[in-house]
Image (cartoon, rainbow, N blue to C red; front, side, top):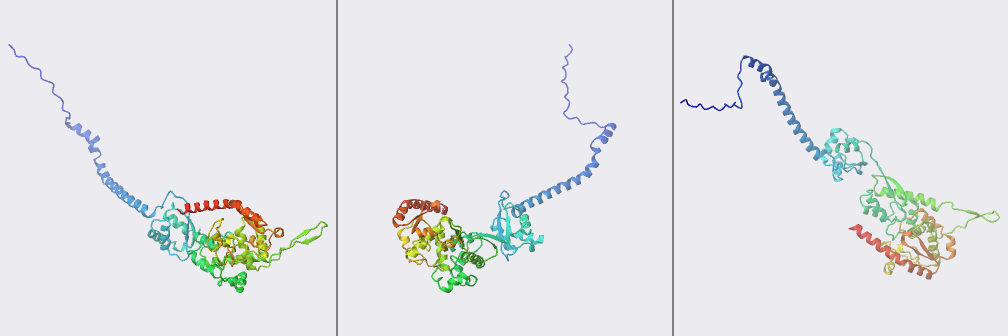
Length: 430
């Protein structure tokens, strides 16, 4: 019996079957395969190596530059475009300017600033003055601005009527016009250095009336708006103010104030002028009191009339601002203890005018001191007091009883106003 033959399973084709080269396959391979671009690889390989190395170098240089720019050259605050007024004082070196720029948070590194200024050759183009800079400016932009000649060598200051010498010193210090308030105040204590340039001061000095005053220049610093050099020191600023005071005094004390009126028949008559018995220095003292007491300019002559009536009657002037001039108390409702302070400025104590001005008055206040309201004088007004504090209005009265009633009516408003201001001062201090 014949044996059965078992069918063999089909042979699997290998996953990879090496190609057998014959003459034709080798020719095709050389024409279209790897061998075809072998020569190109030999050319590209060194180029690619060079480019790779170049990219690595560029990356390293870029990283180093970014690091240097971030630490030394970039703006302090790119998002802050606010203007900062930066002042270069006369005689400052480039190194000192760089240090001040860093302190002002306008620059990252003063050494880089110094070397860049020298490298750009603009050292001599940077001069003193005030420049408008910004934290968003980088060091190159700052150097360009400082060397552009755009600086302002002047500043504007405004002295407000009614300011005291101490008010002016505080204002000038805050504005950066003076480096030290005490130097300014010391100059104001003695008028000797300024008397020869001011005839009103000279008259007061020669008469001996400046003795005993806290500040001999008080009252002689004309309120106005001035343009002064940024390099000006305290004495030169005072010279400027006193020179303007001379101009104001000339206009006020030597003006031709003759006025005329026509009667029913058409005849002209000279308007009566008040003939004051006060000296020029005393008129300045009275003007300073008027400036402090009157909240509105239309009341200046009326306040002057009350003071003149009291002087003529031999009464004490009893002006609150004179009682607080030395203490510096700033409120409306004074206590009996505050008005009883014994000093040569307090007109609750002294029988007439205080020993000196209590502020620097305006020309209008000086004119009112010389020309009080004659009708108010004739009507016999002897008292006044403030009404609602923020209104600036005054209540005038002829008798002590009327005045006491006015004080009783308005004093609660003064006290409330004082409490509110004290609370605001405390809040601002914290």
